[in-house]
Length: 335
Image 1: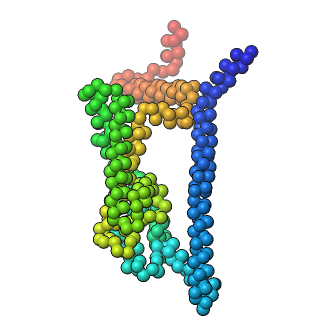
Image 2: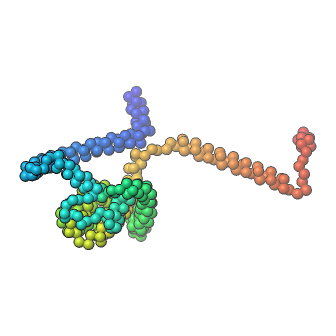
Image 3: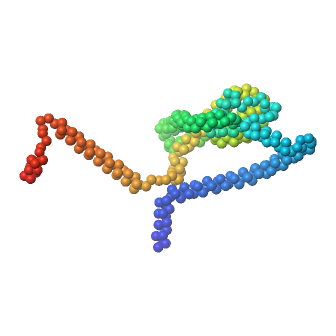
């Protein structure tokens, strides 16, 4: 009896293996979310508390030095300044020369909208701009997905599939091993060309950025997270700001294509395909067979109906042959 119960449990688990895997996937994702929340809270909460205390001290000191200014007036002024800052407008004298809606800045904004990066440092101010942003995004985001899919499909053929096939056919290496080595090398090259090298360049061009902050910006941008805490080209003494913005726009577009090519290359690995199938819903073989039988029956019935119709047309179109009377036909059958 215990062996029968154990075998029945094993069969039950095997029959619903995909559902069990999907349940563990959902549970693992929720635990990962909780893990991230715990780590971020434990790391960032002390810094937030220190910043709040520092701001309270600065506010208290400012009011003590300017007794003619009341606290409600100061808070009203600071509230208006922070509201303008949320729209990308600063009252600082060293930032008054940078416009957010010249052509190059608008081009950079459009690229972040269509790529769903959305830094949030610049947003439409008018109702007309907000309405146009909605319409522009509804049309532009699917258009961008179509464009990126077509580009990635063509690049993947030349960068991934043909090299793997060449080494497999020309040198006789295992196709799976070649695909794994190629995916790793492609990932290393992509990380070097679109993360490490641009991070070094940004750390030189941006006065307030170190290498870690520059690398952080590259990752946040190319992964389309787009937090907006670091945006290049917003410094006061930025040289060739228009050309710099256009270069950043091209970098983001090319980097996004490179990231998608690498992702597609890894997704085509045989091992990852098998791993993904563990969480997919498997079609029942009996249902597939019933669909095939029904399709065959429908096809056979349609073919027989078509054949009967053709024969009937041929009989009607045959010359010098008259249809046999029903009575004669019955008599012939009796004999």
